[in-house]
Image (cartoon, rainbow, N blue to C red):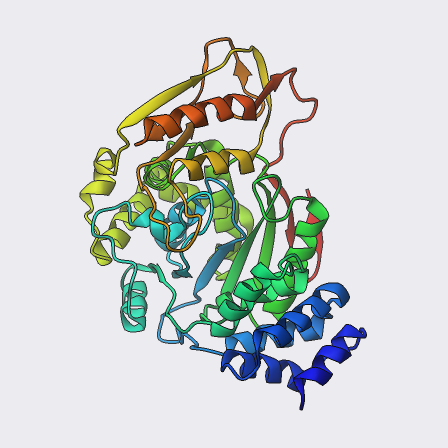
Length: 441
């Protein structure tokens, strides 16, 4: 088999065989095929696309390029969750303890965040001494003890994806549904959970900017998961404005704790209830969604989800006092109020631009080597459809550099679009995608 022939075949619109896909993935991962040939193939795939069988084969090849995390020793049906990324997306820290408190094992291995704010691991590291590096044995034992583990991926999970993604990033071949879906799902499928919920974000602060693209991505990922024998469902959710009110690592942990204690933003609570309901159904814990919602709401009312989060922190060596007293979490030196010069209603609040402001404050990473400021970020005091008077506080900037804070203050005033009330109310959830249908709400 020759790489030249594989490139030519896809360039001319042909369908790659399972053997051809396995050949290029294995040999590129092992360093036997040069970047320039894989770059040519990626561009051919980008232009001519892959069908469902090719996409599933590519995903499988990437899964088997590295370690498979065997979770068969965990008792019960194990559930996992993945978000395609957004701004202020703290769902894992709320959702995991809620699901675990309902008696369903919640298992999640995450990567580091690259972008507006840190990822789940970075957020959890706002808690003093919280340990994200767990052995597979610890991961399994912790989950059997308390029904939840959240840790970093092992170094050798899907090495093919790491190499291919780095190349896609510099060859303008990222925006291809098959390549995106196989990249995401390979990492999920390498961890042997029984069911997966996918939160596919759409809007200004998401990778997918329009609804059709988000639906297509969701369908592709559900088909991959189903084709791999894994129960998989996707929700398509709104990321035109940040989720919740907090953007920034310690700020988001504090907000997650608020939600677990029955306070916090309604949109974050509502989304976690919906995601959790699907996970309880997939885990056969309940018979219908109403029963699932009742159980999840009960974990908030009786504080069992909050107590479960404390257990998670304790089991991963974190200081539980940071949960019991969130004022101990990292704090910025400066808190600046951003006040409105206009009155009316918030018409739009571009999530991507708010995310860039958080990044400028140091809340995220420009490169994987960047150091995150865990205390920096933004708290939104007004969101879309809220009434605003002149002088009202739109947001609070948490910063350790006063000059950057002043720059961000100007930008935030421009990002808030204030005018007449929107004719249609905003939607949080656009639809659900199962192996059988796409339902748009």
